Each structure stands twice: as C-alpha cells, then as structure tokens.
Image (cartoon, rainbow, N blue to C red; front, side, top):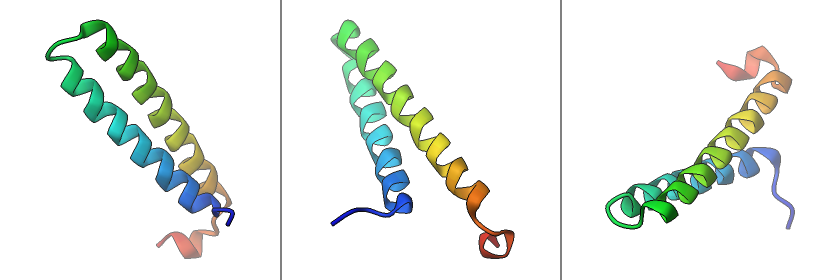
Length: 65
C-alpha cells in the first residue's frame, strides 16, 4: 500500500531520530562509525525537513492552523 506524503515525511523524521541516537551511542566508542552515522543522520534530517516544508507550502493556510 503506497504511503501518502505525510507518512513519508514522518518516516524520514523517525529515521533521522534513530540515526542521531545511534550516532550518539557510537560517540562513546567507535568514533569513525559515529562520524558516518552522524553524517547519515544529518542527511535524513535535511531530507525530512525539506519534505515537511514542501508539504507545508502546498497545504492551504486554512488547514495549517
């Protein structure tokens, strides 16, 4: 079943949160892996923010309140 764009944006935010959590855990030990996870987390965060902004731009102002 295809997801709607709101579900897609929510999933991106969830992936970003998980990646940030994993990166934080790795910072306590494996710094190279932590750096890679931090980079991936930032990519997910950016993609999620862009998708959310795209949806907001197309949403009529009366529905945003």
